[in-house]
Amino acid sequence: MKNIGNIVQFQIYSTMGNPDPERLPVVYEEWESRAREILEDGPYYYVAGGAGGEKTMKANLEAFHRWKIIPRMFRNVENRDLSVEILGHTFPFPILHAPIGVQSIIHPDGEIASAKASASLGIPYIASSASTVPMEKIAEAMGDAARWFQLYWSKNPDITASFVKRAEQSGYSAIVVTLDTPMMAWREYDLKNVYLPFLAGEGVGNYFTDPAFVAKLEKSPQEDPMSAIMYWTRIFGNPALTWDDIAFLRKQTNLPILLKGILHPNDAKLALQYGVDGIIVSNHGGRQVDGAISTLDALPKICEVIDQKIPVFMDSGIRRGSDIIKAIALGAKAVFVGRPCMYGLAVNGERGVKEVLQNLIADLDITLGLTGLTSVEEINSSILIKNESFLPFKG
Ligand code: FNR
Image (cartoon, rainbow, N blue to C red; front, side):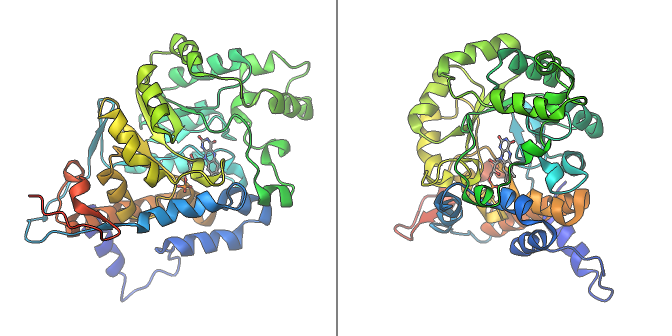
């Protein structure tokens, strides 16, 4: 959709004389505070919290403040296009819905609501291995809309292979392997609240419906859910994996394989060497290694190493349109959005997620135009300055 920012803005201002009593927030911080009012401590902190002292979670946001956009004038920005080409497909916006598990703790419609909201906007939805709803049900709710599958590589190779096959069969078009979570991090709030949703049977929908998983149980998950959950705790993550294991995954699928959680340039080099199809610069929203580098800080060096050979995506800390512009200017092809969608889900289910994403797109479109650009393709580092240390005088 062209010029979506103006359309959304006009829709909002046109209600000036007749305010909508069901009005949802616009300000990101208000979505979060409304979600805080709705959710109990356990689920709220599971979503909003990070690892350890939450230094990396904060660093993700602060990193954006160190880069400033220098807008250009008189550039005819009347018609703008936010579309982007990813792995041979054109998508309307440089935004993907980050993989997020256990959404049933946030809203009863959980993953189905988020997937439908993403589908309605043409935003690819990345279904988590840890979804409460099995991947086939999510696929069914999405029709032909674009979807990728996020793999938590299980200790049991049969389950890993089965997940990938099921994803292929239900129309997912890429596999995103998350590398940064071979085990749950030290998350102080979850430990304080003694809250791990999986132990209450949330987020295990893909496992409980998986033939390879069920084959290992004496009784079905319906008959004996606690034993099934205990087996899940033993096989969920796989800390023994190494780069050579990518060959196993390649044997299972012809789908593109992307690695999520890359932060070191040398790991980016290895990703190229091992022939993956894309990487996601991510620190899991500051939920895994407290004190880890922010993703915006990690991005430029990684993009230098990758040298456009494969697409580089970025997540962790994307909250507003200008954040997306900065990430793309520093080399990202597109960004993943995590917590903002979950606050939308908490506040108003599918409509909430859609509103959050639509506002983000509108903000991106308007900020792009006001920067003096008319397409995502045109965004590059010449529009940015770091800490006002130099002025770019390039063309
Ligand atoms: C996540 N994330 C995540 N990542 C993943 O690969 N698989 C998963 O199942 C989950 N689950 C999950 C649950 C919750 C509640 C959150 C908040 C996050 C991480 C997610 O994909 C993404 O990397 C971060 O959310 C990005 O950071 P922001 O946008 O939340 O700051």
